[in-house]
Length: 77
Image 1 (cartoon, rainbow, N blue to C red):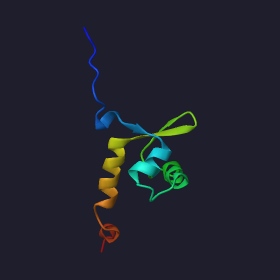
Image 2 (spheres, one colour):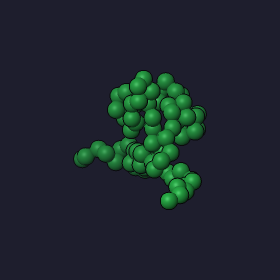
Image 3 (cartoon, rainbow, N blue to C red):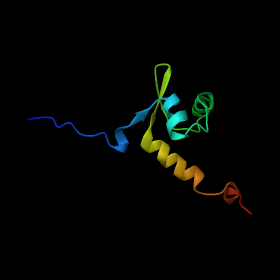
Image 4 (cartoon, rainbow, N blue to C red):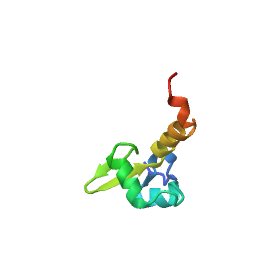
């Protein structure tokens, strides 16, 4: 049985904190801020030793949940 060389899907793509700052946030958020947001529990990540790994699909889901609505929509009147 041969193993196929498949292209990585969105679920299998992992990024480092530097890649998240540069590629995902397009340089608008620096490396230290990505680490701070991760340590405080705002960004989804997996800690591997001293480093964090970010799943691209989880970041996309997080962005859709947090950036699709204006901030004032969370206020209950």
